[in-house]
Amino acid sequence: MFIDTHAHVNFRDFKDDADEVIRRSLDNDTWMVLVGSEYKTSNRALNHANRYERGVYAAVGLDPIHLEEQKVEENDDDNGEYSFTTRAEEFNYDTYEKLAKFQKVVAIGEIGLDYYHLNPTKDVSAAKRKQQEVFLKQLLLARHLDLPVIIHCRQAHDDLYAILQDFRKVYSDFIPADRPWGVLHCFSGDEDMAWKYFKLGLIVSFTGLITFSKQWDDVLRKIPLDKFMIETDSPYMTPEPYRGRRNEPILVQYVAGRIAEIRNTTIEKIADATTDTARRFFKI
Image: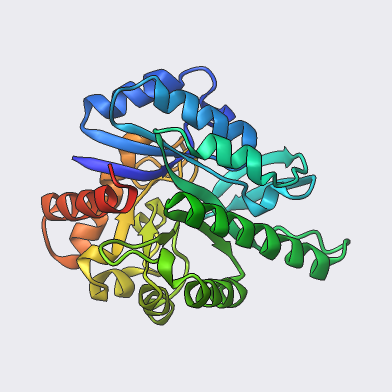
């Protein structure tokens, strides 16, 4: 059994066949957490999850790239090619709180900082401050509801770490003793950075990037088996041997398979360990 801990079957890429994609994954013993990036996709994630008795869960949150209206483009070997235009959304605590109280919501996310997509023609300092303020508000929402957080970070690890470190000090009562309270999704740091997050009570997760880039091989060899989860970030980050196609949750097995190769172990061991971690993390 596998759990894809971060999928976007609630995005427009799956508007014509979302249920088919979900059922295909469930039929192949693959559960999933559908992650929102703003209110519309958060609500859609919950609607999908509510259609299934088990195996499909939701996370709700406002991604930093949706704080401004902008065109988001990606065209590189790691992330593939895609383009979309965001609409600026103001974070409304009460609205997200109401959404997050539904039973199938298992996390607040994805939230965090993204300096990669900042518009250099605008006030970058102000944009960073706004991202940081909204991130903190959503951390407080997670604390209030006792939910873990799914964290997005791109070219912002220093600021992100400082916020998380301060938050952990001030709200130590929020930090559970028996499970992590947050995950760095699609982890992009090195081993030293991973251990800094581990010491804060966080874990990391890996996508199909690791199937065609060796950048994280050393990290994956050395970090404890209970400190990471697996994800697709579908429709993005499609793993080998399916690069160039739309990603979907069933392909998370290829992430597990690559980790097994790197750690010189069996895919069954990686599946069992990451599934156990995900069950504890999301309380499912």
